[in-house]
Length: 331
Image 1 (cartoon, one colour):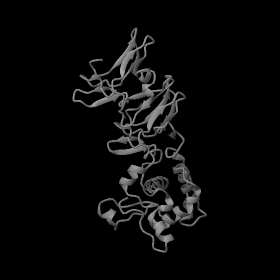
Image 2 (cartoon, rainbow, N blue to C red; image 1 turned 120 degrees about the vertical axis):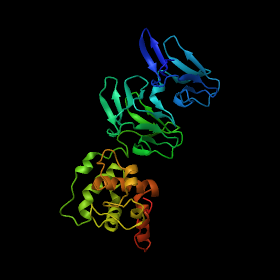
Image 3 (cartoon, rainbow, N blue to C red; image 1 turned 90 degrees about the horizontal axis):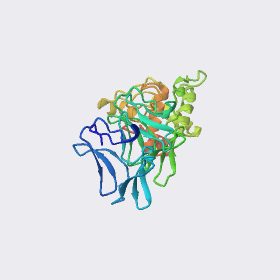
Image 4 (cartoon, helix red, strand yellow; image 1 turned 90 degrees about the vertical axis):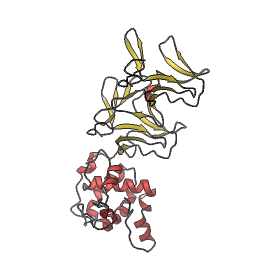
């Protein structure tokens, strides 16, 4: 237990494993009676944990092969050969912290520039959240199932796996970062929605042969695909565009309650800045008036809030013979 706060295992001068908690002088390692091995700051805060709570009176052992392990009888709950491959519920990756795959072939690193990346042991980039430019950002595996990159309280990227209590993030031996349920079922991995919104959507221009509404179809279809939504939602989105902005990507609402509260809704489907910040894709421009970024944030919010685009209140009202209403006065 180093004086800088890092718990380290070495063999003949080579570091085999460490808790990545340096920079916390006076921290201590504590094997709690609930079975969790924690690194605790002088103030009592948990800097790192093995995630093995619920196994009282487990033993910490050091094997002749150089592997430290927490065991409950003959069951290995955690070991230095695999611990760094799992981010347990409620655990964080602070800037500079990393997790290693069980075979040490790859690692996931929360970079100090705000980008969460996966690299091979030799440093080749495998995957990233695209959130560079946000120094001090951190990653957290929320208790509700979401893996989120935050800067302060603002989410920059997330796995959209909320509603899966006790889900955890695992860096597999093939280098694929995966959010899995408590039963081990994969819920998200790179390439699965919502992290597939690429900058390509922002480079797609309107169709000059379309109407003021349908000219945005190429952009809308790209965003729907990025969100993992069927192209069958196109008509619903076109209806939203028609009522929200008339197809004007620079439209600004300066009269409703959002505007009175200092957050006028803007863009194709009229999104306010706080919602844009929370639901945007970090892989698209950080610009509320960018058509692709505006559509992504607004539709992502609608899916998260109402379960589907089809359930947006304005669309439901129209189908029932009523008038269109804004899809959320609080958005």
